[in-house]
Image (cartoon, rainbow over all chains, first blue to last red; front, side, top):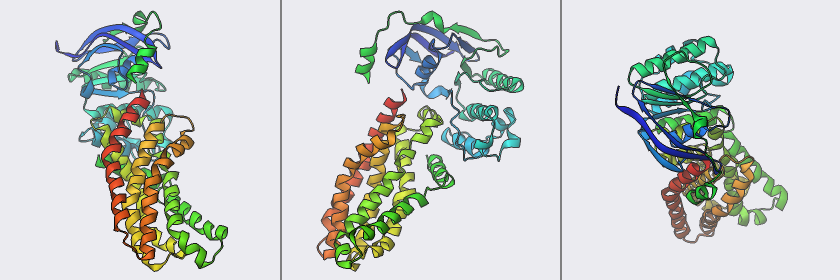
Length: 207
Length: 218
């Protein structure tokens, strides 16, 4: 429990060439979750995308991310013409995981297994998108507003899945506004807001 | 990787127009030409190699923007970037899937379309050989162009403007191979140069495409 899965030191990140966050430092141990809070536009998504390696940070250090990360953003990455099973099986194949049955079960998707993703409701799509996390087999989940369009019982399903993940030595960073009902540290992103708009030219130089 | 290839094939078939669309477009181009220049064999035969290659090239261009655009829109491209597969491999596999759904059927159907244009008999074997060796380059260069313009609204036109100039060497050597074959000259040299362009594209452009994707996803 004391081994840190993810360590972030003095991280600064930018969105669209404008510096959004600076001096972000935290450490996340195996078995623990970190909830990111902050108003819209405060940089939660930017921080998660930087941690996932989708965009480079301006300064600072990230240790432990990279190949450990399973990222779930605003969109679910579903193919509308593939069935629920085919969508999950594709990601299981990419991540080299075995059976998709536990993932289907955790989000109660068995009854929908043969339905095409385009015929699912928004909440069902979201559940399928979250079930993908279970077939990645990765220890560090980075979740961006995972409960959007989920109903109360689906939120409970999701919270249970995260809790099981934490019990088995995983960790999660979750940007959310609702209370998920399990113990988690809270990081207020607003406290790290970049003061002066700087770094535009620097980002250009990196690109 | 094989899962990605299989998925792209299934998507191309289920979405409709994977195999059919490029072929139908090729057919229409080839059928329209005699209406434009007249049906006489003396006019059609000399231009047949060029028209067949142009038709194949435009048919290939038609489905390029789907290589990455749909994956970008539904978010799966971001997930692929964070997945344990090299992005260079993703670009190469997607180009391969594009070739199997467009370049390969075009190559197989080209002799039939050659008949419509009164292509002299000496040209058929060279037509198939040049398309078989040249169309992989079209898919690979196209995948690079699609990677450059992914995420742009209405990037299709810009992509055509970027990609078509890069198709010029393939077009020159491809059409020249068929023309020499028709005239009974040695067609080996342009064919080898065509193969060289394809191999160069396959070796370099997956890396260029992956770099373009990484920048565009930021």
